[in-house]
Image (spheres, one colour):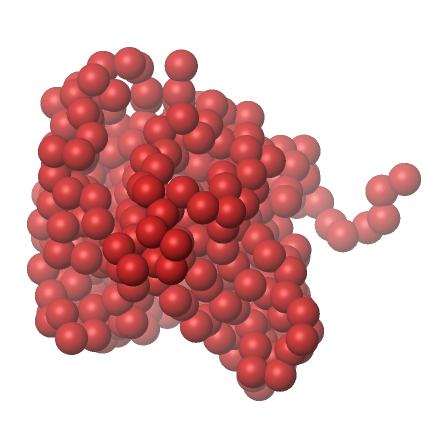
Length: 345
């Protein structure tokens, strides 16, 4: 039986390490995707049984993605395999080229994901009622999947509504990516989609993505978070938890990292504050935060400790390369308890 189910795209990430995309001669390959990274973290760090609903073109590249997902322990039985036409004319697999950045040079992502197999999913392709009747406790999706195409918005809406009918807790991460909305209504359309989908969510991760008149319109400091989350709560009156990371970026290699949340029962809750956090690779840290938060909420730890799990897991994810977390539960617990980077022998 699956504990947590995610809906989203899984891409191959091409990582030039310390080099640049435009000059490298070698890449290391990882798997990654905003929604997938959450269930991967929940499986490998927190020990929950997880699965991902996605689609891949059935060729050697798609099977490499599958192999990487299997190595992460995430159930692959819900992958929809689309016939390969030989050159990706009708469907293909997504690629994501990512530089980690260093110092004054920020991280850079160059995605190659148009017309992917998962972007062509349509309402009615998946029997969500049967899937949710099988007993998952939590369902997660987000704005990256919803932004892939006009049809994926409807698929996300259909899935979230079905999860709610079956009493499954639903989380949503707006996770705005400007590149997905170019020529398709931009930030205004993304906000419209986010509000449509977030109304189904019990928990909104990255909730500050819904603050302001459109995505990216406001940058919220730690002391501004209570008012900003209250604004979002006014837009989503049925939400049970609104949570967010808080990040300042003095340089690509040093971030001030924290979090905050709001619930109708507890009001505003501040998460741990980790100033001057040394960063190797920040990509996927927000997804790792979501995984830790979900773990805490599923375990009934209370919102403050769930925030601590999320903040610690996200921080540890930034100390290793790739989108996905390499942290152990013992490391997360130690950081939550105030542990240090001292050598362990």
